[in-house]
Length: 263
Image 1 (cartoon, rainbow, N blue to C red):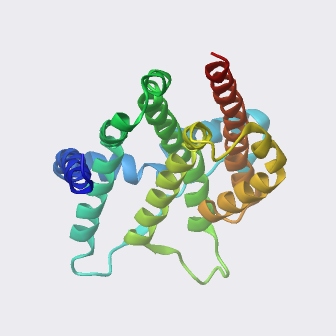
Image 2 (image 1 turned 30 degrees about the vertical axis):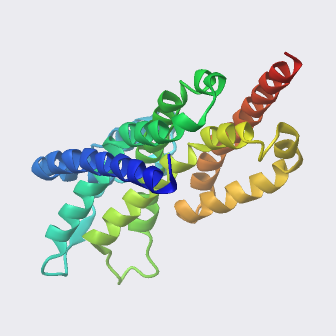
């Protein structure tokens, strides 16, 4: 295939991916009550699973500080088209999240012709692994990081005379950015796998720069979480675990390469 043929092929993969996003976005737009009342506003509600669990836990261990988000936050819209614009934006975000496995599949179909048969055989589980890790990252952020962030940022006051009446767009952008960032960061083992396959990183390289990676993980955790130590630690632990998993994956890739060269 010529360069223009490759571009034409890529164009159709992008078009099919966009159509998948559009289909799920239309569904999210139609079922707005579920998307906003149940999903988006869920972490701010007292009856949210995490909030109820922490309050029950606080009663068991006699620690009232664990009980969070028991006062419903007040939201407001200050733009004429604010709610309609937010409705469209969240519909497309939800469509992209729901269509992620298919988007990754289209990307895989585009890259697959450039791989050898052995590489294709060893990489067949990449779509499943990427989808599972992305889903785990989103669920982790939605049920753990988001409620803590909403509680800290929504209840923080510099003075009792200043009431928190939060802009709805600010709340939605905060929750969605936290959830999406966590989903992407949970793809770390997949990124390490592909980088090790092409020889850009090795297990020894990852071990050598482990301390630097931990500092970088701490910085990313500080960006996507509110400025409290507990939330940052809760984000850092799974990311460090994923990094260590990436080292194990890089080792396995190197062993397979050594066996192929030996043959």
